Amino acid sequence: MSVLYDVEEEKKYVFTKKISCTNCGANFNDLRIMNSKLRRKEPDMDLRPRFQFVDSLKYGVTACPYCGFAAPVKSFEQLTSLHQKRIREKITSQFMQREPFAGETLDYATAQGQYELALVCAMVMELPLSEQAHLCLQLSWLIRGRLEEADAEQGLLDETTYKQLQEKQERYYRQAYDLFSKAFTQEDFPICGMDQHTFDYLLAVLSYHFKEYDVAVKFCGSIVQAKGISAKLKDKALMLKDEIMAAKKAEEEGQE
Image 1: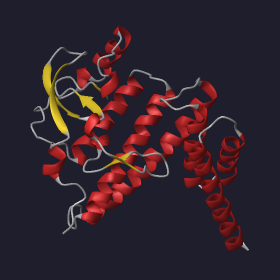
Image 2 (image 1 turned 45 degrees about the horizontal axis):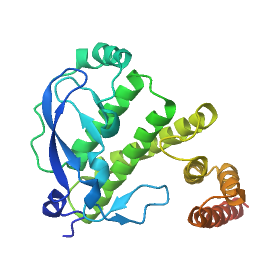
Image 3 (image 1 turned 90 degrees about the vertical axis):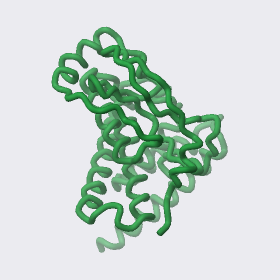
Image 4 (image 1 turned 120 degrees about the vertical axis):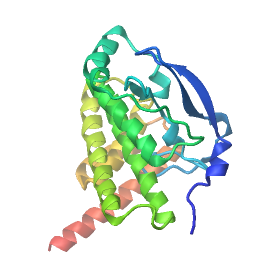
């Protein structure tokens, strides 16, 4: 039986940090990734980051087990008084305290639960659409990783659970696309750390996935025609455009 990520190897990239919750004040331990030790690999077509030995996405959210507040690691300590009021009224008041996580690494199921809680919190706080979209995209990536793990380790998931995760992955992907599309017309760049050309590329990939070929080609075209962007991104856009045109042609021929 093959293993996607070796737990003992993953431990070398994880450390424990003591956190004081910005919502309720409780102290708990949070697992964090040592970013300086990560060895980057080629990302997926939709920019999902990949690293050797560990899926860093699993460690991207901090979730308080006492009050239910969850947010990306980078913004967990940036809770405004208005957002705190909304979290306490709509999350904490209904949240059942959990036993603090005591493992040395995070499994995909636990990480998925933390991201889903962070998404609910983002919606309750009425954060910008792009931030909600990014959490949806990361959730889709995370579930992709969970399914890849199941493919590598036979028997890890039963057939029903595997199918449910596939469907959930697709729903989060669609939510990400819809929210990012709205953010494109309402928010200024950079969006989630992306400049316009990188964002255009991501939208091209997402629209291509949902077979909105004309939209995807339009985004690719804007990248190819732009000046002052990296040759690597332009080449990726050209390759994507060729793939989109081939898929569109095959679909049209299949309808004849």
